[in-house]
Length: 375
Ligand code: ADP
Image 1 (cartoon, rainbow, N blue to C red):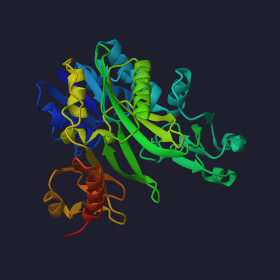
Image 2 (image 1 turned 180 degrees about the horizontal axis):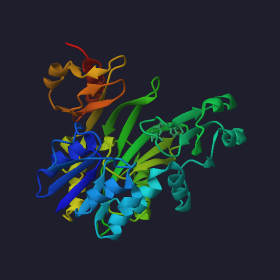
Image 3 (image 1 turned 120 degrees about the horizontal axis):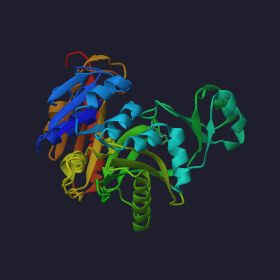
Image 4 (image 1 turned 90 degrees about the vertical axis):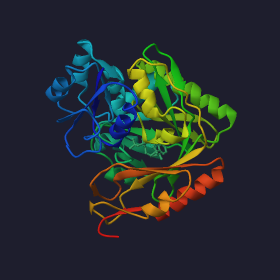
């Protein structure tokens, strides 16, 4: 089979690493010929994944296509699908998810619990909804990693809100943030990976580390699984889906958003689960049986992001000390230049004790820095 990936970042790179276990021909489309996935595929095409003609020409001779980012040209994928190319996930699912407005409307129409919201077209329009605060303003298209999300506690905060189509969503009193990855086969069979807890740094409001399997009361666990399955069934598409949810202080579960692809919250599955999220997506696309998602050991993930104040060729300070640690697995994405906040790699830690995972996650965060200049 000839299979294409739209986007050549770290998700594409790890997907290609897993592809080497099977027989196929891999193709990547991406603007940057030095991207993390460029040298791991059979055929690299330099081009814009948002351009109709580029995506259509890339996909024409392929058997199947998947994405590593939602901002792709959906119209070209629709045409390719009509001509017989299998797209994972289906373009209809990408279309719903790509824009937070249509994504929220989809949850409402399918009775999937997600925080109450109103759609706002611009900043003037937003200011008509002061009674809706405290709320979170989310830009319809183009947001990622928390960019495109603004907490509005009081009316004055609206002055700096997005002047573009967006959703204004009720603020949830979050107790835990969870992600659960669901695999859907061509025949509609589903399997779930264990839920992951995403621990956010309360000061920086950024992801600090992730723990898997999340420690949850059984009732909450069943609720999460039931909502995730209901959601992916409603999307009516094979593929891999990461459903991000909030558990509030009264143990209610709310869907935050869905990514229709492999996801940062599943990187630990490479070492810590029998079947990784990347292997699972190949199994789906190659029409093989779905894999075993059981954890081998509990695990943590620490994202390696570019340090503040450092822009330029990347140097990994503290790498050797981290590599000396037992059951710690380092992944560097091969991005030549670092900049503040850029995802440059991740580290997976495995241990039977959660206290050990948390301790090592904090330790690795303070030991390993992505900076510029000589060591
Ligand atoms: P992105 O798509 O950029 O990852 P998210 O929609 O996941 O953005 O929001 C980023 C973070 O903002 C979440 O992880 C959560 O901490 C916070 N957040 C988002 N929506 C809400 C909400 N309704 N109530 C409270 N906090 C929220």
